[in-house]
Image (tube, rainbow, N blue to C red; front, side):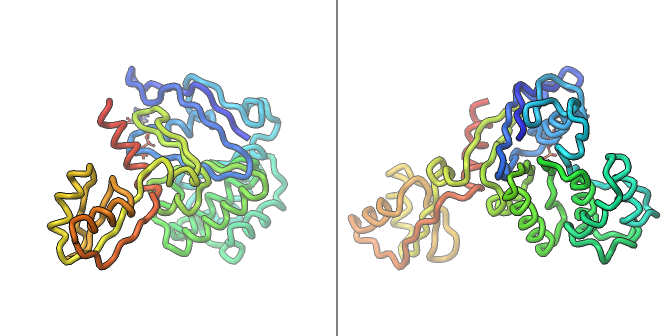
Length: 296
Ligand SMILES: Nc1ncnc2c1ncn2[C@@H]1O[C@H](COP(=O)(O)OP(=O)(O)OP(=O)(O)O)[C@@H](O)[C@H]1O
């Protein structure tokens, strides 16, 4: 649905983005990860043509400018809704629809889509953060786009709104559309994304599908033992690391569950509990980020 190649950007001679390539396949939600300042927002602005820079972005094979109705190709939620504070939600969306060349009847459709029909008369200045996010989403959906790009959409949302957004984006992708969502909320993204692209210092440093994560990053082994102090040096000798969590419990990285169990048995260390947690998106991200920031 979207292919971008060689996206690069400098701000006053400082490189913010280097040769970033990105693909958004249909039926998928792609998570866009990176530390503060990694270049996510810059990349998103380049993709959308909101910022000049080097590289090429094609939407279904063509630059956005070559599509007659770009609002039907891509919608974006970039934070803030840039409307007159005294305007009602409906009036605001009607103006957005007119700007996008979309019939005003679409306003009611998008209000329904984001669950804001009942609140259509509210002034923009009275909206809660969650409602403003929904209006932002309605704005992005006005032209019925094939691709949706969201920059930190869950910032400040309550759990109810986060769940709504997750369901909404999954359903949107399931219709054969593509979603790119940047977020710092790794646990949230883990539930939402099918694949992730990790950016560090303006470069793509990793790409993985969620099903690959467990193979790429190492999980953790949880143990409980009354004599963890005996286990710790043995784990370290085998190249693992043990971190205490509570009194008798600890988490071990670098060794598998079987290795920890065997090690304890060899040294007659009683274990009251042994469990393996597969690698989470956080484990994957931190391992990638750690390598990246150590090497460079
Ligand atoms: N308008 C600008 N002028 C100068 N430098 C900029 C500008 N916009 C971004 N930068 C710089 O480019 C780099 C990438 O910033 P960007 O906002 O894209 O990162 P980000 O990954 O979105 O970070 P965050 O998660 O904090 O939003 C940073 O070093 C930032 O300081």
